[in-house]
Length: 337
Ligand SMILES: [Zn+2]
Image (cartoon, rainbow, N blue to C red):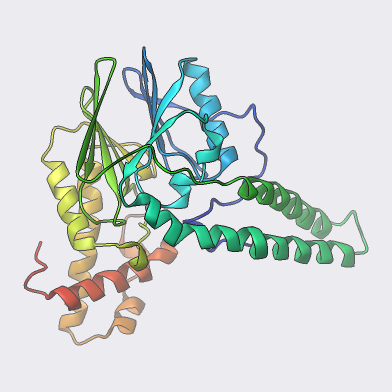
């Protein structure tokens, strides 16, 4: 696929999505399921006799429709609540694929952030990036004489999936959350207790965690990228120092299963792995700073292979830059783990 930047805001292209497609589900606890979404943020859903509660909306309307179809294979109960863990499009751009009457719950700054961070990117994708991409591909196809060649077929495949993706992106529509909160929100549903907690800035300024109290299961949103390099975006309020503290605090709680924003469903130890990655990286950066290296030199010396992670390797230099600037701004004595 040619267009890969902005994958945080918009999903990677989907090759063959049909309405019948469903995802695999993992029953992490009784009536509580996880979907390890390959085209967006991971989803959790809880089935109760009074309806279904879902965490995160997927990356596009068709991604969301596949999530809804998957839920429908487990239960016919109505989908009542949809919780959004944070602003990023791979967790929110699926909204239009959910039933119209679903109640959306999010942190109070999510709507403002969505308009600020996502809206112009989506408009740009819709009006410029994707139409240009399609007309470039079309021109390439027209210029190839042998319509049976492998090159022609490869570009044709790209063209067709891009058309599907373009149609999907055109359907993205944000909806104002019905319920917002500042610090805590507790939902009681048919004997279930779901606690939503704003933990302060970490991955974004609006990231919340969702605790399924009856199950000792947590959906962390993108505060956990399991076994892959995390996305850190300065403009979206990233705060690695606080992120580490959030993870260390959660690690003290009675949690058994962790549904991360990306990567496989994990156990409690997954929280520690994420925190350890940041500590390890910050210690490496500190050592290089002590030996008089500047940011560029540090970026050149720390490599993806120094970590036991796979995927999003291009994010490592960004991770280094963010931690380097936090270390410089906050002061080394203050930043101590
Ligand atoms: Zn995110």
